[in-house]
Length: 182
Image (cartoon, rainbow, N blue to C red):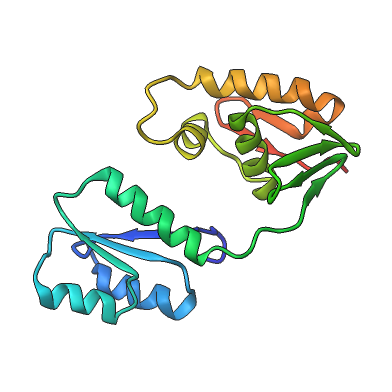
């Protein structure tokens, strides 16, 4: 977990080699990461055991993806640390509380998705994200479009960032990463 930071964990109880209860207990010993148990086991004893081992919520199959997403978002809102005053890289500064982006001290106008992309990249510098990962993270799992949407938004974001647009690096056959200019 230390080398691969996560915001939330969704666990099934019935997994090969190690059951979800054990994973939940180990994760809880290492982190206060929000955990949702998502499983076919609906007995009261299993639910109680899940909570006892540290799960924050327990959902049984079949489940509604919209309810799972709502529960995940609620947990993330409650457990996230207060937003930083600003995030900066090179000449780019983001003020998350105000939802504003500044380029060399001058505010620039971004669409909601452009802002979300830039914020995500700057919050995860040097990490490589495939187009599919970016689609799922920024547009959501139920997005009907294709991966060209990511390319188009990144192209316009780079243009708006001017010379700082080079910080969003394209990796052939891999995706994109945000590289802080030295």
